[in-house]
Image 1 (tube, one colour):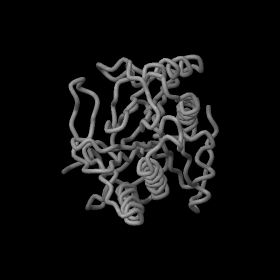
Image 2: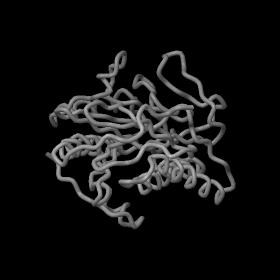
Image 3: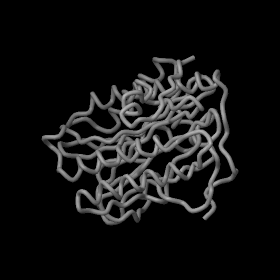
Image 4: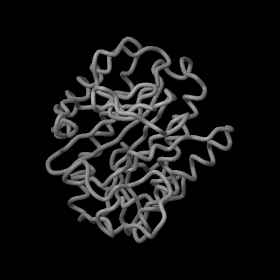
Length: 284
């Protein structure tokens, strides 16, 4: 299967990366707001309204609304829904596992990120859901840590897969890594080449260059990764009804190190803990 349309990634200048950090920071702060706001009794549309207001009030445009046929600011995927869940009148209840995917464009540049959490907090959660969320986030950071200038982009997916294999093994389960949907480049558009798989791919793959910006977004399920698109023609759900988690960050790679563009702290804390060089980028 040919995942890539070019043999190397596209780099950005320092000025362009500053614009990317501005957009990413707005996405990160919007997700912080949403995570703090989630509670039982809210609808997924309530979250969408909150996100749109925050993005527009801070000089951005919800870039999901720039995707033809989509009119919302977020994708809100609940329980067995993997990605692309449409915000609506669904009322959230204690114990729901929700993945919130958010994007914004500021000026020319885009950010895109996602988080997963349990409505009502840990006391309302099934243990396996908390483990799924934790292990999916850990695999995201493993993939981020594998991104470096001069390396193969394929190293990212291999690191994600290895992380999930190891964490699943410790828990006595085999996670399903969704293969039909992958990460992507990001810049003047939210979705750009190259595609970024969340699993090991054979071959050399594109080379990461100075100023590469990509979105890494593992989508992981407790059961089989086989999935279906629901009747709304957007929402992707597990075929076997098993629960799913989705984590995503926009990341920039330079020869000095990494910046997680959509993390409020730039990813400094997690990168340093992983022993990965952190190279802060100030917003424009």
